[in-house]
Length: 407
Image (cartoon, rainbow, N blue to C red):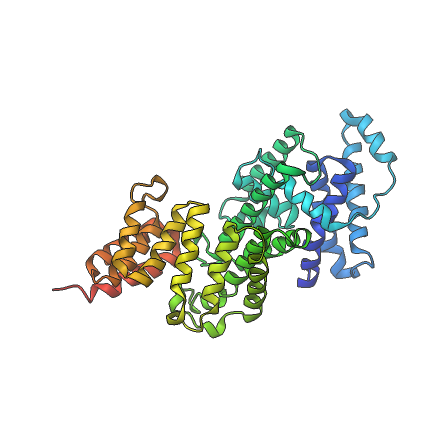
């Protein structure tokens, strides 16, 4: 049985070893399978025999042998097998560079967002197919098929194993950051199931964001995304009761927030804000830093939060940004102002029946003194979400308002 230390080491080494093989042999699908076999072998042998002195070299050697055996077993590829078998053992290649190239490859534009996310978690995150399937609440066979199709599409697209240059690099980097953002969000607030959050997914997203930031420390959006993750994850211990019930931001015990993560995230925000441009992730991180800076919910600088959302709404229009701006506006100008802004979202098909719009409207109706309207919207929001933890919270808010309704 592997120890947590060995599991962390294997997860860290997986993308580095895969990068070595892909750079050497140029066949992502076969290399990925070979690396997974090497990882499984290490998980069995290392706890019993000890971690080798050069664990990365051990994995590269084992994976290379598995790849050669795989090529040799396919008689239709005899010519390819001869070329592979004649090559010397792969030398050590800087892991961080290969990890970044691997991230870009997994986020190939030929793939859907779901496939990009699954392949990133498998190839770069080192998670097994079963772990990824559990995280997204789908059968393992379904996730295995999704990952297999993703690898086939990358092969069909003929993508090279390298960090793109110029405009293509900027475009692909946006996809990489978006995929990491999706992974973190699913970890921080699970979209379905009984758990409010999946800390392992959130931590994995942070780890991968750190890798990207180590390679691109001057990129404001990379810094902003990492800061946003750190500042948000700093609150996760205070977000739920021991029974798993959701605790809203204004009611959280801020003494349980992780001040080390907040300090690191705030430092990244301050440094990035001195840069030449403001991007969506950096602005969201600045908003999170404003919340983290308040000792109590009542001391939150809501005018600053609203101003940041207003800028974010202008540079990256999105109904969720408008939704959050409505909350901030309600805090500065009253719930009726927030409700008026929400009405602008009623015609947006992306928000039709969305539980977040329903729950925010319920919250503002409650603050505006309309318990009947608030109760109705809380109940509708509860029916619209697949998260059991959110359902319980919304239903409890509706039940609490029942006693306040006129006879």
